[in-house]
Amino acid sequence: MPALVGLGVGLALLAAVGWSLLRLLRIGRGGLHPVETPGLLLAAGAGAAALAMLALPWNRWVMALACATLVLAGRLRRPPAAGGPALRAGPTGPRVIVLLFAAAIAVRLLQALGDALAFPVHLSDAFLIWEYKAKAFHLADGAWPVLARGELPPASHPEYPLLLPLAGSWLYLWIGCVHDQLVMALHPLFLAGLSAAVYATVRAFAGRAGALGAALLVVLPSRIYDHVGMGFADLPLAWLVTAGTGELVRHRQGGEPARLARAALWLGLGAATKMEGIVPLVLGTLAAALPRGARLARLRPFLAAFLVPVAWTAARAALGLEEGHLGGGVSAARVGEAFARLPSLVARLAAELARPEWWLLWPLLLVAAPLARGRREAAPAWIMAVGLVGAILALLAWTPQDHRWLCDTALPRVLVPAAGPAVLAVALALLQEPSDGRP
Image 1 (cartoon, rainbow, N blue to C red):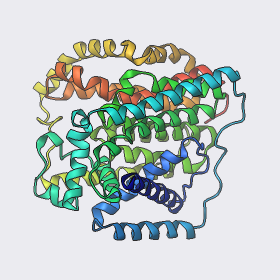
Image 2 (image 1 turned 60 degrees about the vertical axis):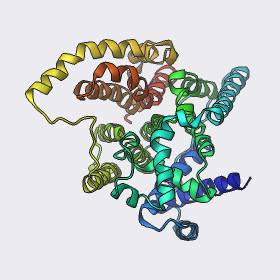
Image 3 (image 1 turned 180 degrees about the vertical axis):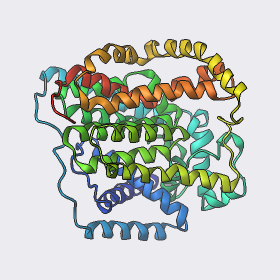
Image 4 (image 1 turned 30 degrees about the vertical axis):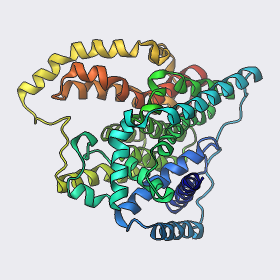
């Protein structure tokens, strides 16, 4: 029980800090759907807690004082103007369908919790990479000493961003010890956050039945669901990317500036989660810049978000942590090799996208493409989904590693962050009424 109490305290502090951070940044939570709000407050709080753990001594009293100070500052901050409605009034859909879809999602999430608790932790990616670092940081009472002394084995990829390990260390601090299984039990929250982000975005344009159906499309495919047990970082990245894309989509509907700032925040946190997180940040910036008449000021939050990967790149250089996946430099021979690989990579990618483990998500995206004309609010989802798939293809072609091995091991994983935006694109193409006005 004490471990569960510590876990609850750690999560409650993250939510409180997340609320304060949004309030201090004057981007509030106005316009957020109640379903997505708890998870996104935890995400914002995790980002703030990670910064605190990099800057402050690892002591409960110090961290509690830092949290109390931030919460008080947020409380004293004048709240921003109220945002737009969290959802548009519309039909809920057939009651039986609504109940059926909601029950299916609930059962799937409960199954995810059971699988995460039962999965052997030592077989998970989280144990080898993310939580290995969390434990090392916790036992050393800090991240910088472990990184500076080079105490992490190469298999733990010390060059990877630190948001997930620091979040795990935060929870260990409040639990009072290393507790692998409790932290593994948090991975179903990432799946719940992903489905909530899809539901909240689609609900702004369509009925409840359609929004629940879209949310179901991200919890059923085994290519996504399997990440709950394995502990890959692609699932939290998919959640953050989908949340950011959803903010961009709804900004085109209502125009609230806070949505752009929150989109930059979620995508910036994605860049702090995985190396590949910089790609959706670039695509999100592009999506924010595209509408006609867009001012440069609307890109300021995204430019600020780029400080996350820039700062980590500088830290890696100072610590001597090399990134090996894209190494080798640029040469005419390497460019030629990349182009020579493309035909086989396209074939492997097409075969993967057609696999039944995706539940026809990608074929549905092709079917929905002709229907997307006139649905301008959905443009960010298309930019994100298609852009991520294209970036995956380019990165696989460019990496010096064996691309056949990567297609077998990494391709199903790296497609997961593109799945949420793809579901949004499909749902809005099929369910949203075409818009006649400018975004």
